[in-house]
Image: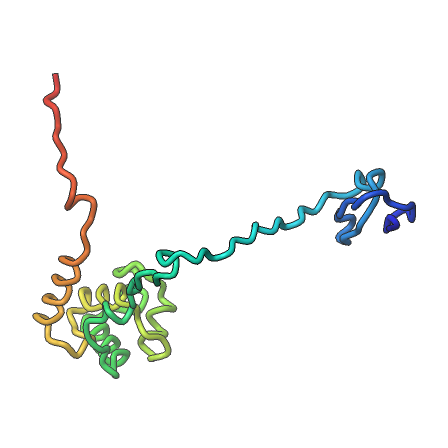
Length: 167
């Protein structure tokens, strides 16, 4: 093999280096002119064992789906409802944006119907404007949220803290 930089014959594998953006196979003397490129190591092959324990399928874990958390459906005229409630309260889009701590452009797109609000933004808008944007009764929303909260256990649910008296 020949060095791609100086043309000298290379004894052994040579080195792969990057010089001025080009990847070259060079001799040891020319390797100092570039930065060495690391060759990806191949993982050792592991052959499956023939034991019956290894052949058993892994338990299937059900992934959490975003649609599991949906409470109700957004009404079709959500943009018009937001605009009407905002105007009725005498607020501009800038005032509403400051109130919910979101960008004004986001609110304008939501009011035009170009963008569907995320749940977090939707709840902020509902709270400030005192409107409902879901077509589900309030008691059903509260009930489903309570069920979702009961399902997930946090570290605080498991641990109990003991505080020693200060001396």
